[in-house]
Length: 141
Image (cartoon, rainbow, N blue to C red; front, side, top):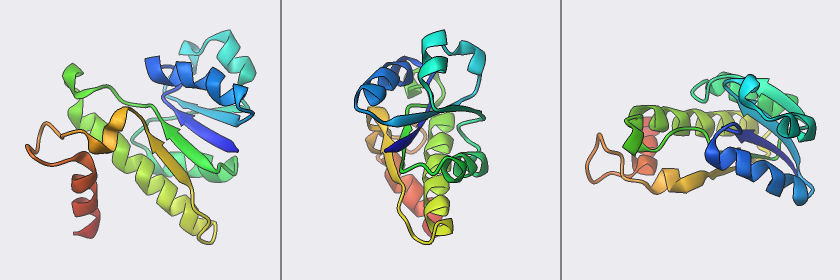
């Protein structure tokens, strides 16, 4: 399977790469700053794309360019680091990119894994709402 791994320079993403490769996946790294990648990560990746986790168009283009079957999103800091708005934007961008890429490929679905339970976490700015609920309500309005 061809997997686009976002956040590959972070704590979770950097630990996922060896596991994905051990399971024979071809991994395309999508990172904000490629200079943070280890030499090992750089040598083991199928390709490296640079961009923001909130840029759905660039993420979609990476999915399409590399014919990715899936996106594994490890980008974004936990809300405890004061980046809760960024987390929601990244979540929405990845979901939008996967949906748009699937549609552009004629309906071929793109699997999406959102790590650390991002879609299930309470959004600090909307007490009582899950990030997934906010995404669905934004998309349906």
